[in-house]
Image (tube, rainbow, N blue to C red; front, side, top):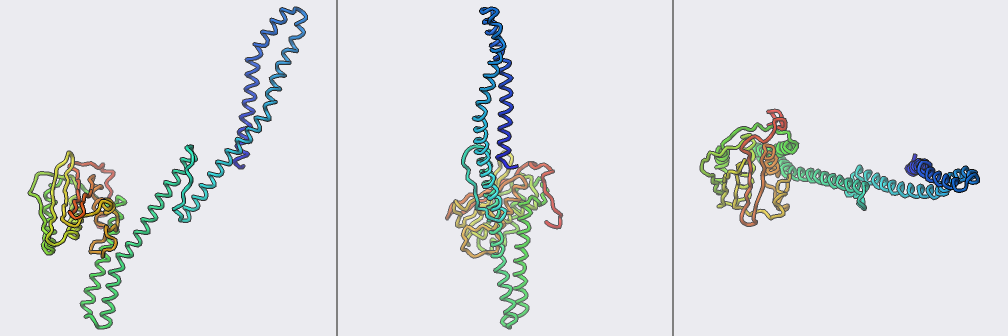
Amino acid sequence: MRLFPRLLLNHLTVIGVMGTVLLLAAELAAHPFIQHHVDQMVTLLGSSGAALRGDLNAGMRATLTRALFSALPLALLVAAVTAWVAARRVTASVRTLQAGSAALASGEYVRRLPEDGRDELAELARSFNTLAGALARVEQSRIDLIGNVAHELRAPVAAARGYAEAAQDGVMDHARALDAIQRELGSMERLALDLSLVSRVEGGQVEVRPQRVPAWTLLAQAQERFALPFEEKGVRLSVPAASPLTVWVDPDRAAQILANLLSNALRHTPPGGQVRLTVQAGVDSVTITVHDSGTGIAPEHLERVFERFYRTDQARTRGEGSGVGLTVARGLARMMGGDLTLTSTPGQGSAFQLTLPTSPVLPAAEVATVSAASR
């Protein structure tokens, strides 16, 4: 049954029920009133008025009945009009929603519904538009991811092919060509591993085993690991003196975060520059800040640098980084109950603030795990 007949039937049912209620109400309320006055009139007229009692009662009931039935055509007309208007509006909204849903199903994520009014249908349209916007962002993210991965793979694939052709043509020694090809394959392998890691981090599927760790130990290990790369580039790396501050983290994951931050700082700091590590205690956290004297980042890029493959300068050549290091770093920090933020001034360098908890903050049930082999 279509919507209009159903609404009309509901309206007619309401009219019938209300008509019956009105008749009963008139009988119960009006009859005692009329009866009282009839009795008074009979008393005044005597025996001649007694004959009028039945006529008056019958007239009263007939008058009420005629009044109700006289209003019935108008009630039916109003019921039909209101049912038609309501059915038309609801049907139009449903058809619009159906068309929008079909468009989303076919991949047309730019489709939006009109949000006129403040009723439930308008709320439904707003919810639909919110869903469409979310799907559009997901689709754009998927497209960007595919494009970025293809871009990142294009360079090592082209280089490996060039080395292979050079070896075939006798331009390059086979041993040197094999070494170069193996180097490019290693680059592609690192990209694949980074993509796997970032997907697991974003899905909360990375194992974290927090424990109490001296904050300075993390800094000393990072300094030892990066001393040679900083020295080779001519960038000074400074670490604060030992302190009693401790943090509640997975030491391996914390070291991974610091490695990403220091690699990023080294990549963007010119020779002769400086990268400084500082530690500051908070109420229930410790903040490790990585300061660099690089070129800095414009305000519009500050939050987006944590997106996968995002580059502040889209025209610059891809470096050794895969473009997901900061995404992984922030994800790991948040999985351990901390956070990673950035402040920067163009021309004056950048500062990444890694905030780590000093006590357990995550229930055991919320700690995601994967096999040790995937670490």
